[in-house]
Image (cartoon, rainbow, N blue to C red; front, side, top):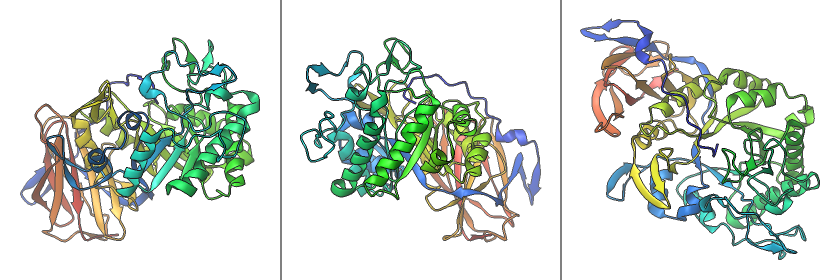
Length: 494
């Protein structure tokens, strides 16, 4: 969701609203939640970010790659930061170029410079990637950062398109249709060409870049209002697709990937701007026949419709045997509390297997690290809230029911480790975590590792504590107001 929509205020139910008092020994918990390992919600694939537009601005910066994709504690611009360990990378195949084709040029007026992403196919004269119709030196900044991410452990790569190449469009403008934003700007005779463009990039990456895309997403927020000038999305690439055309580009992308021997590379759809439109497109879409549904390997959705029925989309996806990715999320709250609320709800009701922040570096308070006019600024509290989740809930873990919307839990079936991340929005309180539904809820007296981030000004930032212990089948911890805490319990068995 590249638009700067302002999300609703923080309205999440605090964990304290459970209203259940529990006591053990001489310790009293203000509230209690019971972790239920029998409710298993999928194997976690990972955390990530899209590279456009921040990588387009900054290019390859090794120290930044260490912070985002590594897991070591690193020095970054005078601060000591915990590496986030993101392993999911979304790479944007751009729709822009500066060349002229028989007197035609892209209409760039109003397209913000850092949102102009170079595409690789310069014209329609040849589909041969070795011909002069292709420029594989384009978009070096994004590509170089993708390599740095790979070298630090990233292992899930997605190729996505905001707009087809400008010369495939009806008005030569990758911002969208002229006038009416609810018109598809891709020419009817270019659906196969756009799909072939993406498949060719995917094949070239496999052959020459050492990158295998896990998935290809041919349309971004297809139901959004993409037009120029004057729309909320003006200044960035975008293309509207109605439902029949969305089905068409989905089938075409599958066919073009298969034609290049990429049968194993899935098509991701539909990358709707919110859960509600995702339900609309997938559940109620008569245009998506059996063949079209079969062409989709995974359902992507964006997190800007915070009131959408997450569980309805989960049910619709599960009915067709599809996993879900929260493939794009962003908000303007630098504290990270709104992010934590929506992330917790996503894991509890949508059950994604991966979760991706749109721009980990961004302006207007959207990023976890501020980026203004190409200059990196402050690291805000949102970064440390992300660390609470990303560094501890790792690929291969099973997401389980933590017992409350403001807590998430994951179980490592190999290392027999339980991870709980919980958020407290209200005044100071003690939370009791009941592990009695595990066969072995950790060893009595064993240390529970915990990390805390306080999001109020001057609050602690991802601070480690060795002061919490298992007592029988439970443990407890005191939370300050507006605090996120992560707990790791070892030797837990189902």
